[in-house]
Amino acid sequence: MADSPLRHLSTFVRYLRGERTAVALLALLVPAGMGLQLVAPYLLRGFIDGALSGDSRKTLLDLAAWSLAAAVGTLVVTAGTEALSSRVAWRSTNRLRADLVEHCLSRPPGFYRKHPPGELVERMDGDVTRLAAVMSTLLLELLAQALLIVGILVALFRLEWRLALVFAPFAAGTLLLLRTLVGRAMPFVTARQRVAADLQGFLEERLAAAEDLRVNGASRYTLRELGDRQDDLYRKARDAARASVRWPATVQGLSAVSVVLALAVSAWLHARGQLSTGTAFASLSYAMLLRRPLLAVTTRFRELEDAAASAQRLRDLLGHGTAAPRTGRGTLPAGLPGVRFDGVSFGYEPDEPVLRDVSFTLRPGERLGVVGRTGSGKSTVVRLLFGLHHPGAGSVSAGGLDLTEIDPRALRSRVALVTQEVHVFHASLRDNLTFFDRSVPDDRLRAALGEAGLGPWLRTLPDGLDTPLGAGARGMSAGEEQQLALARVFLRDPGLVLMDEPTARLDPYSERLLMPALERLLEGRTAVVVEHRPHLLRNVDRILVLEEGKVAEEGERRVLAADPGSRFHALLRTAGATR
Ligand SMILES: Nc1ncnc2c1ncn2[C@@H]1O[C@H](COP(=O)(O)OP(=O)(O)OP(=O)(O)O)[C@@H](O)[C@H]1O
Image 1 (cartoon, rainbow, N blue to C red):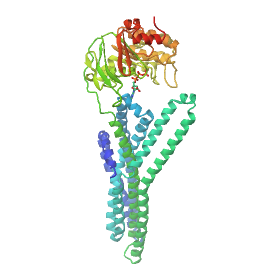
Image 2 (image 1 turned 120 degrees about the vertical axis):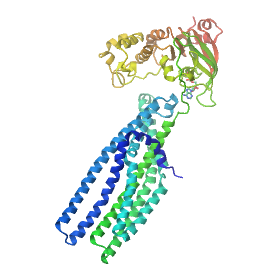
Image 3 (image 1 turned 180 degrees about the horizontal axis):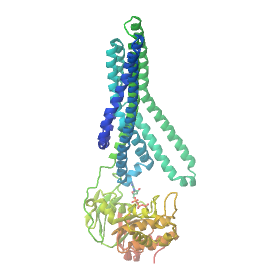
Image 4 (image 1 turned 90 degrees about the vertical axis):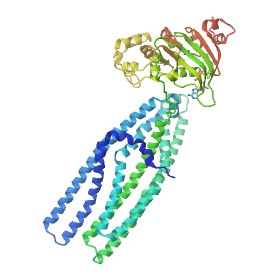
């Protein structure tokens, strides 16, 4: 059975709640506009019959004045409807867009692997805009058009029942057809919208990697893939258009037949003297007018199906990943937190364990270095400690509290994660440091930059803390970006620092420049440092060696480094760093 568009749209009705007055006014204006359309043919009849029967000039002028008033009324109602509906659409969709952005910002990393930014932009822009049309007037208009159809049929019956009999089956047949066709085009429309969003995601990803693609000679392959995707979009758009066009084409055909029939009946009745010229004109005007709402309903119905498909995709997006909300409300106790992994097993996918029964303990202020081959689960340890995922078995705790019991915001205020990925926003240096919090005093910002080793760099900036950074503004080297990331952490002064190979993308020179700041950051804090180059772990107290997700070795750094039989010593030997 066809999916009902209204079911998908109903979820978003709540965004109209703040617009009750405007919606109530629209509920009056839209039917009023439809009602005004019924007046014109009625006045026309009076005018023609009056003129033919030699009525006084005053009556004819009165009728002309009424016609003018109806036209002005229609103009006012149309302008009012337009203004109000734009306002309702703008405000309600802004609220929806804000909800979507908030939802996306709170999603775990896996969400962004499933939905690349280009796809999300298409949803927040394209889908929301399509929904806006429905939220403003479409539903009201569909209802009003249906009322107009009934109104025209009643007026026709009153004027000439024999003509009404020609049109009633046409209108009823069209509406019955509508019932059977409701939602038929939706699967095709949904498929078209999905492929369009995928194309957007593809373009966004490829353009972001333009340099890599060029360097690796993959530009031609990318263009070929773009061609395939465009062909697919064309096919899906064609299928959707075919499915959607059947309905208006049928109505057009039916309508043409019924108008010809009405013309024949009018001519016949008029020739027999049973129909005045004015009534014939008025009836035919109503007959022509009847085509308008029926065709409008069909065209608007396509928009409704488009919007319903968008609504379905937005509902899916809003529902995505809500299965495991964090419920913790606790906060980390004051002071430096200790850390404990107790029999932790975890996998990103079911039946694909990444960590197996991992246990270790760090006392407050202790620093742990995590080493192991690529893919052994080092980064996963850090992600669990940052609360990005929860273990399938065992527990991860900080400051004596299981992380599932801690409010994520409270956790993030005391725990910092430094990775090799640094995002520099297109904003001032100040905003880049504070994440747009204007309450942080400048001397704290300068101190944090100094601790991160960016003091001399700051002095070279023309506008100091107000210097714009990011795309199209002042460029930064990879090392400076990493120092900026460290300055952000110094500013927050967390008790627990997690580092995931922060120097991995730096050349040895930049790495050497960064090391003093990294070492300062570890001083007087509990820390977990992931590093595949063991010789860089000079300042940690303990070492954890992971192999295929299991703890292969754990102990004091000093002891393991001095023991030629230890795995850590072997790693140092391989790196040529044994002392
Ligand atoms: N988000 C994810 N979804 C699915 N699998 C993942 C995800 N992240 C990591 N993995 C897989 O988990 C395993 C461990 O990954 P992890 O990043 O923890 O290893 P690592 O030791 O830090 O590796 P590297 O030194 O290369 O960074 C790998 O097999 C990896 O493919």
